[in-house]
Amino acid sequence: MDVDDNSYDNNLNPFDQSVGVNAEIYMPIFTGGKLTSQYKKSKLESEKTTLTNILLKYDIREDVIEKYFEILNLKKQSEILGGVNNTLNKQKERLEKLYNNNKLVKKSDVLRVKSDILGNEVTLLGLKQQIEIKIYELQILLGLSMDEPLDISEFDYTTLDLSKFMLDNDISKALSQGSDVKKSVIDVKKSELDVDIARSAYYPTVGVGFEKDFENESDGDDSYRIGVGFTWNIFNWGADMDSVAQTQYKVDQANIDLNDKKNNITLELREKYSNMMTLSKQLEAQDLKVEIARENADIDTLRYNNSLMSSFEYLDSIDKQRAAEEDYYTLQREFMLAVDRYENAWR
Image 1: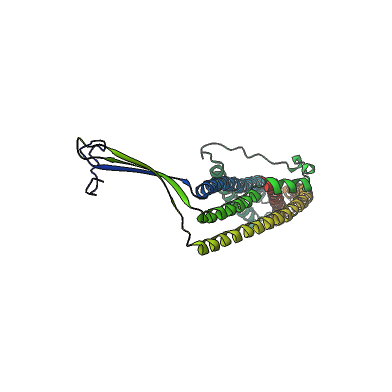
Image 2: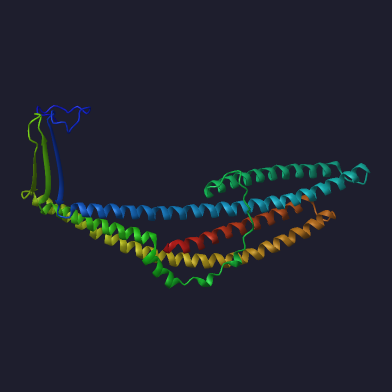
């Protein structure tokens, strides 16, 4: 501002003595701990954001696991239907030869096989399209280019050693190192800092100021002043006490939430452990069911090739194999998700 309190022209030199300029600097040196507490609170908020990002990464991992086993199931279904197509085509060729040679084969039998082949091809085409879409979705989750090939290999659940998990030790880790618990601890610390910020209203604010006047006379002397001042609102303590009481209540509530969080994590970890072990046993049983379904499908394929069973019975046997395979991959997915969620409980 110039001497007449008009806005100063930015194009002028503020150190030109022909222009009247006033410069002031003020810095608080004591605020009752308010500024320090606000700084600590902002650092805690940054830590909480980091923990939230860690938990988000685990959510993405779950999506990746789900997509992975969906692709494995679709590939297995496609493989089964590919084999069925070969069997049906061989049957069609055999029936056509018999029909053309008048070997007591009805035309409807030939047409029925052709219909089964067309229906099978439509289903197979749909599966291949689903595989392509699921692979694209998986690439997106992994942050990969859609042009980059992915090797979707089979998973062997027996390679997982469940004996390495010690429930009591894992619960201790989850309660001391888990991201969810750490976030709740941060909420408690932030609430305690809010109490300190509210209490700062009880204290005066002390600051240091510096002021310099640039004279507008070419022969004038510059002047400056340095001072220490304070402000203290002593007639607002009633409202300040209420504010402190409210923030203290939030501290108590945050501690209750922390204890609830720990109890819930303990309960969830025990449930996740039990679920993981149960799924492991179910997966073993389903593995046997898949083996039986595959053997039955192989036998029925031989019987069908030798005209010892109808197309309906053969395709019904294949459908049972497909259902067993799908249940197997679903259980594998649920088992892997259970293991992953259990392991991430203390991360």
